Image 1: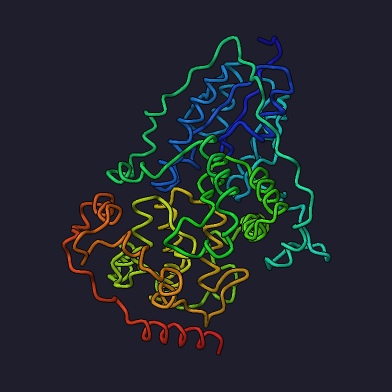
Image 2: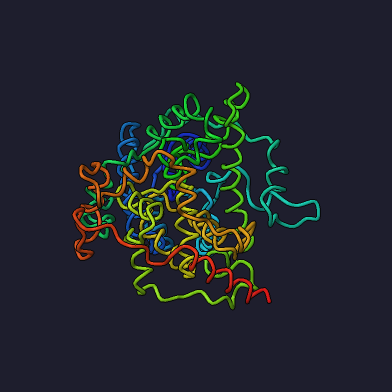
Length: 473
């Protein structure tokens, strides 16, 4: 135990011990370290699934810290007020944290850092969430990248620091401050009965993240270039939950992929490009924060998307009852597992914004409510890319056909069989689980007839093309 003033380690989306610059800097002070998580307004605003998934991660992190002789202190309230109170209670002389890049977090953190420094408290922030700080990646003209491929070419050969190991010891204070009980926060309340279904698909925590990464880089990455699009197989990295909550660092993922590349794995470069695609989303969120709330391309502001999410076809989309098996299977996968295959995300987004001509913000909000791997930057950019209103956008005439896409990426029908029960004599367990996960008020049964399409594909496509051409005209 040290007599030095403690350091508060303010945790947010960095729920790990390994490759954690803020934690390592706190430990280097040779003073007690008090890890803190604050349930503030930003946490309260989370959707049902990501908030529940957060609770799982916090529980695992708490156990991990206790095994190290440390603790996770939980407090609820305004972040500035909570930190001030903890400084008064513990005599802390420093507050360290990992940076976030959405506009609300930047505004909050800047105000807190200014206030703490004015009071003589050592306030420092560190990069623990990205490979490259958004302001460190510039075009030759000095601006930010608006197109992905040039950004990839600019950073692909950059040196990414080797990930740091977790500290061997985290010095504890002589007396710990009081902590809330995680169960009292009821972070999973909005999941209702869905939590019991989705929980069996969750493997939260840093150790699970490393296990999955090891499996992927040794067994899955070789075939990743093609397998990542095949929705009926386990062909993706499965790292999205872990990166979203910082249960593993992007640097650790990058070096694992780089090692596989050096050993000749055919899919390694493709996966490294996906890690930089995530960076691109954050790059854009930082430089053009309006991507979160309105059309990134201003010329799309007048586009006649429908905005009423209570329309029958939009409700059918949400429920996985559109009559389009690819769309419906994807939505049901999300309700059962908390996640959705990336290829499927493009299909359901295209169907909503193009065949149903419904505003991308409705889909963006629904994913924010339902995805355990929800990430503000990736979610916003993904929806706008598919809708056509965003950076690097899919051109307006690219309207994914759910039927031909299904033939290409689920040729043996495994994905649809896994998630759709209606009309099947012996439905798969996963398909039946959907009816246990969704709200009872939807009044659905596996014995129901599978619905007819809410819109015929040619009619939906033609309507979308007419609207796009009218905008361009």
